[in-house]
Image (cartoon, rainbow, N blue to C red; front, side, top):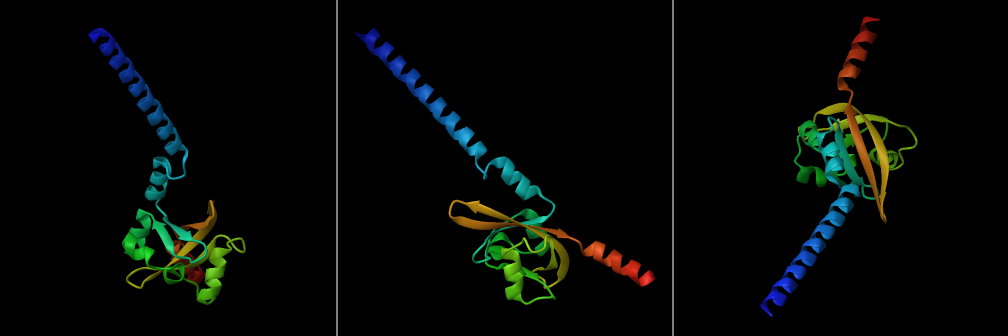
Length: 161
């Protein structure tokens, strides 16, 4: 009887280990294929350009990468409390027009606008906007590439001419 119980316990143990291994395998493969996987997150965080994930309806920032923190001087919590209209400005249009342009990026890409840092300073950036649809949620992915140095060099070249 004892041998029977030991054999039964061993079989139950083997089945439990097999179940755990199958469950871990399925969980791992699912998480690796989801957009929020570690590779995607690393690419987002390690980009040298400011990257923002924004709600397309409210234009409120949902997420920002490390370059955004460095370039703007805000913490993630501070950036999340701001809207795009507070982070970007365009001398050629009012904030409402800018908001429409960011929601509908097909009109002119990339947008060349000013990015406002925490200290109030402005930098020229080219912003590429990509629409993201995650189920019913509409998001925008914004990548801001600093073109301030290029603008200064262009202005100096124009002065010399």
